Length: 156
Image (cartoon, rainbow, N blue to C red; front, side, top):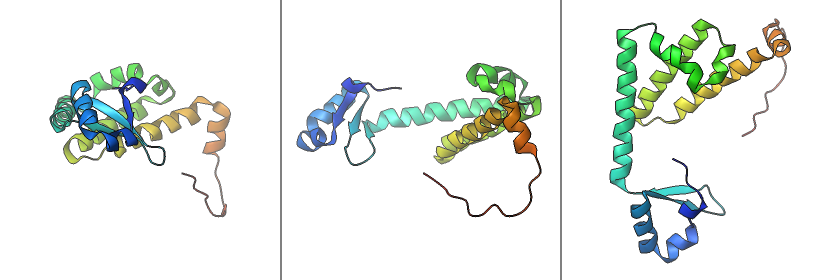
């Protein structure tokens, strides 16, 4: 669900008039609270969030049941290009692997409240597709290497 600026309040608004902001969140379902010096957050009713959690759990269980009854995940694999068009650069085996990893990550999100894994799985497979989409980069990536390339610099 996207929230436009009309559904946003500042952190100062929340501090000055919490009742009005809470009423607005209850009426709209959720309100984005912007903060100049920190990440934004959403104010939402607990029952709405619990309903969202139940919905994710149901979807996750449905996908797991489909895989249980079709170990090749054929139906899900067929649907993947509609959801992730870039999978066309992956082999059939890679699309199956991506599908299974994604369903497992969705299950973890639903059952264990581990949300970050789903996005990591998608980002990892998307990066693989990006490399494979460019034949020159893919050929370079497949070349054997040797030696120490020094320390790795990580940027956030």
